Image (cartoon, rainbow, N blue to C red; front, side, top):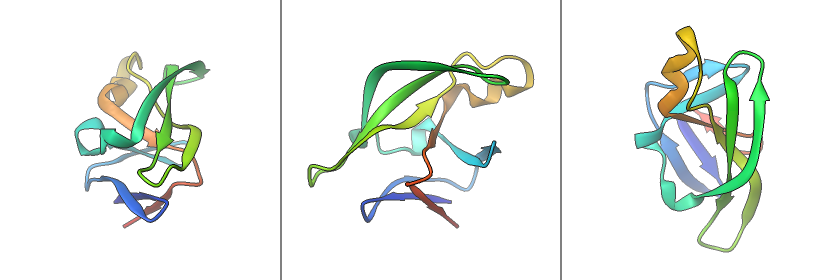
Length: 94
């Protein structure tokens, strides 16, 4: 799977986890040059606390809170701890 934003591949992995219609990419497969941590947090009913990133592209584009992760996911969802998901405007293709 590839996550594509503004014509650039920002993540690529054959081992994503699908939850709630979103592909969670292993953090090591995400180009972190695009990520800027924000102060926004939220709560997912299954995965627990969510923490967000803005996406920034080299051409100056920004997508506020366009990515998130759940580093404290409980139980069986603890596998999400080192994964990042993207909002719907980030195209995910095989």
